[in-house]
Image (cartoon, rainbow, N blue to C red; front, side, top):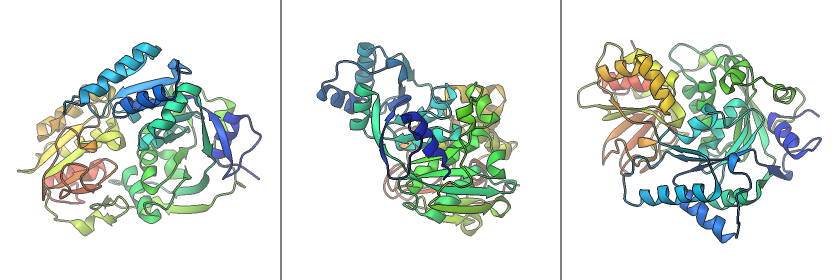
Length: 416
């Protein structure tokens, strides 16, 4: 019997010849990510457990992204606790306002194909874009890893997603993952690995794959995995070894389900308030008035996302009484967009450009809304109260669709 990608990664990590879904195994952790929100809770549990040292400080990455700059007085406590912990245990991989954790973990080279990585944020599934097993955990589990370097996991079943053909113009990987979430439902992939393959997937950039891996959790997935290729190797700055090259699903592997899509049939879609799996074609929502547009987040704040939005906005203006907020995913993305003239195009169109970070996505800073307002956003969740009050309506869309809406002042699928 062949193996799925997740089975190959876990077997390799644990030194087993093979593993099967449902097996309980203890994995050796290659890297962990700790975000600023969880720092005080992790440190408290770490001390409560009686640990006197961090198992490997070099494998720990601490990232300040949700709470920067501080918008509430208590935010400062998170910085202070995190900094004190880093000093005490010799943790040197600390990022303060360099960007969003999930962007930085692959961008800065912390995650490689075949790695086992855990982070204190549900969208840690993002790193599957380079063929790593990555998933979110709670602060108690993270405290345990910091002290031991290990964690038990159950080997997930795998759902195979095959995307044939070529993506149509104006359709982005965000549209693909939203369509998939709508078909699966918010719990349709609970504790499963999503394994992506097919010609359309092969043609995607690493950034586009990041968008899809990022949102896998919205269908309940434990992780999402893409086969490492030369694009992956170039992005990670490595040459793939034999193990990394082997990370593809075998033809005779056991999949709990296989779903096949024809890329040419995909159209722009949105997730409607207030569930991520409430998917509608954009053309069904044409003309719905909006108050704000947000382009950014760990889902769609990369250079190709900002560039796609700028192409729509070039020579145009944001509609009257509509706010367009653009938040690059990292300092590197910000600088790249600046050098390429993308930020200039966005600014000339009337966009509000903010510092790299989570911003509006987590509802802490950067443009929260009030009762009765409606926002089109490129992030990953549209839950009640996510971006302001519980009476804010959040529609999730691709950067191309979001930019078109900003110009029109209403929901639209037209970018001409």
